[in-house]
Image (cartoon, rainbow over all chains, first blue to last red):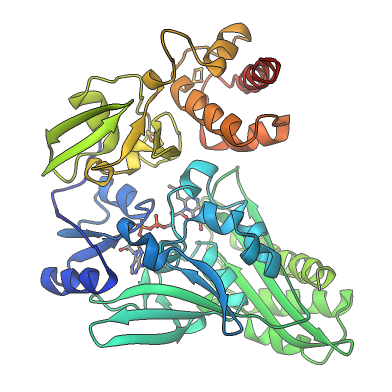
Length: 287
Length: 155
Ligand SMILES: Cc1cc2nc3c(=O)[nH]c(=O)nc-3n(C[C@H](O)[C@H](O)[C@H](O)COP(=O)(O)OP(=O)(O)OC[C@H]3O[C@@H](n4cnc5c(N)ncnc54)[C@H](O)[C@@H]3O)c2cc1C
Ligand code: FES
Ligand code: FES
């Protein structure tokens, strides 16, 4: 029987209260949202926080999905299942529907949160690649107030993010641009598993040429979960098969997959190219 | 920490350590051993219960997180001595083999039918994809859930 080591438990009743509790308990305290990454790690003693600050009571503050000021705002405590079921989010950005349908299983999706997915910082997590492709901004709150960090600068390394120990991720903001299509393609070993490799694509087209491209990659060692060289290749070109295949090749050339139980490095690099091509093709078809 | 959890309509108050998992609270504190426990990775789904109506894996929820909330376990499925339609379906269509995954399967099936009374095979398979059956009896489990859907449509 695996049980976590002992810890103190506190329930936050507001965001400022959560931050005050983080300050009181210091850097060995952790936020618990869905707990579906943190609690398994605590059971295996891979994580041993001295205190858990439970933010599950903050759905009013952190659980909203809304379009405001030309951006889609997704609260950190929005559950995977809620994002999947939100027509506001998935009609604007079908990439959310594609990705959420293949993240874990329906029961895990009932509990795991968007904020937890980003803060976990696992190099094979799906949502960082999705939000990187979308060029989203992370809104972080600390004792000094709010600050905004582009998601492409949010992940500092494996399991390391821009969120300081006394801060909380509160929201993700995605710019809404007319003429945009998006898609996500993932290969996993079995239903509900982390990806062997996955790619997300977001394309904006005006007057027959691509004016903005976002490519997110996961589990293949892409820096910041994105592929800027491949994105640059697409700008100014018509959205066509040849450009998409070349973007896939460029993206694959810049990633550094590691061989592990999910597959050898050359297979993952092949997937990076092919999944990028497919995601771009599907995104273009949705504009 | 003192917590009160309403389980199958009955409030229970206990002093627990924060590290106690909901699955152990149900099994060891309340003797509700219908909720099973089968992995350390939150993969198998045999521990599934409904928390405020929503199925969750109780091996990955702290008991203190259920304080003040409502839990339904497999023991809470029958009403007034009458088995739920999904329970009857598992009996009728031989969806129950060794029975280890069955409680989680039943609760997830009930949740699916509450939201979608007429699910096709694809929807059923998707809904139970978080519940692993070691007896690989998915064929009969899917049939059992369809049986329950048809039974409820008729009555
Ligand atoms: C069986 C299983 C399969 C899975 N499959 C996939 C998959 O295919 N793809 C995938 O991407 N993920 C997968 N996951 C992970 C799942 O998506 C997690 O729920 C998610 O990664 C973490 O969200 P959480 O809310 O549970 O976070 P928690 O476990 O509560 O927290 C994770 C980390 O983030 C921190 N944190 C959480 N919220 C905040 C916040 N608002 N501000 C600051 N820090 C915060 C916590 O302190 C902790 O360090 C799977 C999980 C399981 C159990
Ligand atoms: S015991 Fe396996 S998912 Fe809970
Ligand atoms: S009936 Fe044996 S594990 Fe499913």
